[in-house]
Length: 275
Image 1 (tube, rainbow, N blue to C red):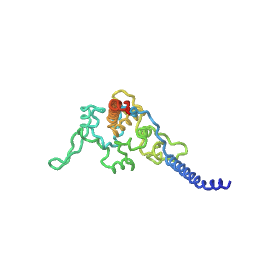
Image 2 (image 1 turned 90 degrees about the vertical axis):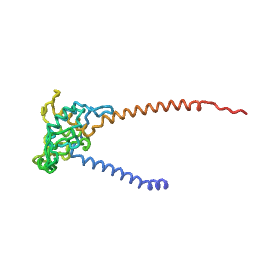
Image 3 (image 1 turned 60 degrees about the vertical axis):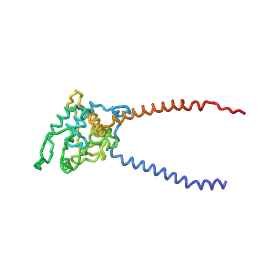
């Protein structure tokens, strides 16, 4: 009996340490939950390109670029994209050339050392809405609109987060502290107060293909476009993966056949010894 009591006494520190570790883990999870209580997690949406064998909806990319150009480009830049990136993705080369030529680009210096303006070319980047960050902050109440080139990679939740943010504007719930002037309530934004007003309204753009321009449709299209902009090589990567799997399966079949052909006789032969 005394031996059992001693064993229990010796085991007590291990139990206490284990309980302490469990409590620490629970505390860390609780701290994480508290840290995320100021914003809602985005809902998951069944994107057309989310499957292992799925490709982008290029018609949606074209509509999303239209939404970006007519709505988002007034505040947000896309510094990593050139006009040539749109060729054979959502526009023809002639359409992109005409689109680029609508923009006046400052170039130079010329032979006289002066800067000059010229029509845009396929190699030009998308125009910036502001010349520098200070001008962007001055025009937006101190907030700097982020560049959208990699926004679906830079935000946790990707396209789901961007879609929820665009469509998630609402009135503050009862008991919520009053918002400062120039801020809007959005439960998906950290803190709930965002300086960007609701960017989309029904029928804000007119799609050439006749698709109804509802808020949800425009948000879906611009999120598809932004996902493509952040990962334009996705279709090639998936196609390369399919080719790799097929090649490895063929190699495995050849290896199995060669093993059976080459080593089968050695494994099935019988060795007998004569006295």
